[in-house]
Length: 525
Ligand code: ADP
Ligand code: ZN
Image 1 (cartoon, rainbow, N blue to C red):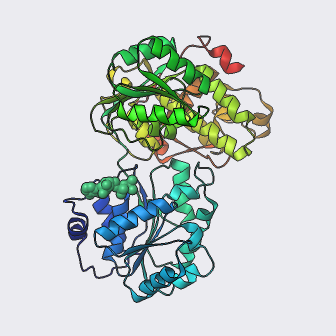
Image 2 (cartoon, rainbow, N blue to C red; image 1 turned 30 degrees about the vertical axis):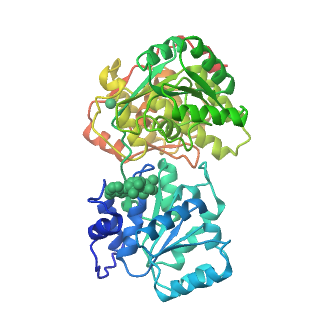
Image 3 (tube, rainbow, N blue to C red; image 1 turned 180 degrees about the horizontal axis):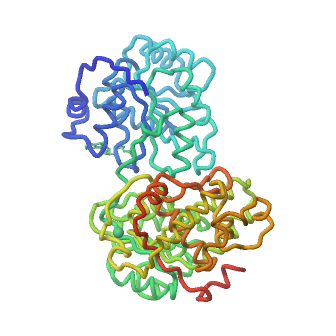
């Protein structure tokens, strides 16, 4: 990216102190702010509460011109604008229900150059004439908040967001920022390519929640496992997430019998009762909320000490968001996930039987595999979690695999074979196909592509199919492969995979559970 330098009159740190009253930048804020002030684009991925707003507000105040902020929620905009005005910043929101007189005054201030920051919802911005009028003024920066809303496969897709790429063409010389708190690798890639931001302009940080201890166990006797966990959290508040409404009710009732102050919460409950339960969770002590994922949005309870998932969560992102509700006060908190192969089978069935388009189904499938990769890993859980968001850390010492390393085997050779097989088949086939080639399966597709004649055909007979699938998932979880999520889930060798082939470090993998153990039948059904 070309850096356009403008004379900066006030140093960012001065603005931080005088306007916001803060002493120092946090995390990567300083870096991001100066990057944008220098005229560069930026993609900013930070968790909620990480301090994204300053990252675009300060450049908007430091650079000449009007800062344009696209934000999806009018209520949220109003809050931001009010807070900024209180701090003496000339901010306003342009929205459709503005009385015409105020609207005229607002445009006047835009052309006058007496406005620093303009918030606008995408629908309003994309109305005929609005962008054209904005082109008549100088923009200091364009910030697109909640940028994941442009991802077609995300949960928050808003069609208007998709059209924001018009801004790229209309304001080629204005630094663009895309900011979000939730983005896995494909969403990230979608955002930056759609908005024409370079990968090198991505800032990812602040995802680690060091006070949360993570543990993941296979279901053996789930009630006993949950009880053992809850017994270490007597007298504390926490959440137990279940997959279904029925399980929520049953588990809450059972915990009540066991003497816990447990309350159910799910979407099928009477709204009034649901609200009563939520309020009790917020206000009373030692309430165990037994809930479906319907519970969580907008809870603001700093001293949630534990989050347990007694069924497999929806995805790594969902898991991270749900466990992230624990320990907001910074004090030690604990997250337990129980998963069973029944859950996995059920989830796979949900995906195959849904009415979603094929591409969406494949995406869901890959997300499920990433989650299984996390459950199966022999590495530090936190490292795997953070790597999913593009963030990183040293082995944490505060997760179950760090504390009790699982039984592992030397998977170096297996990994080399898998990488080589992916390479020789052209880096476009999915996991199942790669495993078939490694095992030397007699398969019409393999013969048709001539892959029964390559050197990696049948070189993996020392492991069975289950083991190979686990090996591949663990390798994906470690970032040795890129997965083409938008396509057919084809594997290609990632940067990390290339480094692995070159440096040949020892790769320890978790021993998969033996075939024929509990739950295997369910996987097949
Ligand atoms: P996000 O948009 O990432 O969810 P915000 O920008 O709303 O986060 O910031 C979260 C909170 O942290 C706000 O109350 C904000 O004022 C505060 N904050 C942000 N940066 C700093 C800082 N450098 N020092 C102190 N507080 C900060
Ligand atoms: Zn760890």
